[in-house]
Length: 257
Image 1 (cartoon, rainbow, N blue to C red):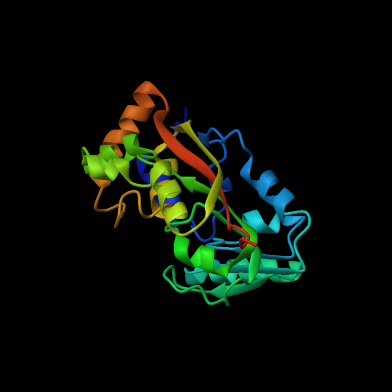
Image 2: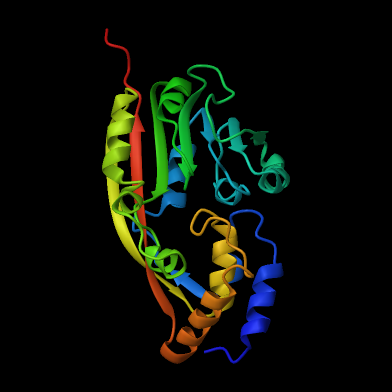
């Protein structure tokens, strides 16, 4: 258990950069179980056999940069300017084109441009656009945040959330939306994973980085609750929450002969 003061922990976490999608700053300060399907490895296996691939909402490009063998044509999109810059620096040496693109339709690509589309933790999944840019026989492969993820932390700051907030991002809804767009869901898996925050700095960093958890979060606005949570962690040990994840793989059907 850390002996550093509340003010020291909060000041440090409030000043560190949260650009990109690399959470290594939390090493030793927070921990999360990983899904059993090993998304990065599984995605890399599919990339090795693709001819043209698109990574939607690549963040800072960290996951895509770790793929051992990329297709000859690989493109990534990202909407947040600091991440666009980071992804460009990381992915251009691998021959990946990074496109600055708002998280809204349409995708800036022609019909049937890709045989593989991937996305890790997309904010929104525009299923009709994914179906449009996929070639017949092509695959969409994605790990997504599920319903009520880390809601123990969300509700600590925002209070009890309504049922519709808990239902959002449900894998059954993703299946229905994929099928409505004309895709065939080949795999759909869901897991609940233990998450621990070992100091209040980890909480501040997480809420600054994952901005949709507590919208508009600032240290000053929530200082009282942060102080209370700091004292709770010191007295009782890590704050435990539960993240949810689902894996979905969908295929665009081949034309009927």
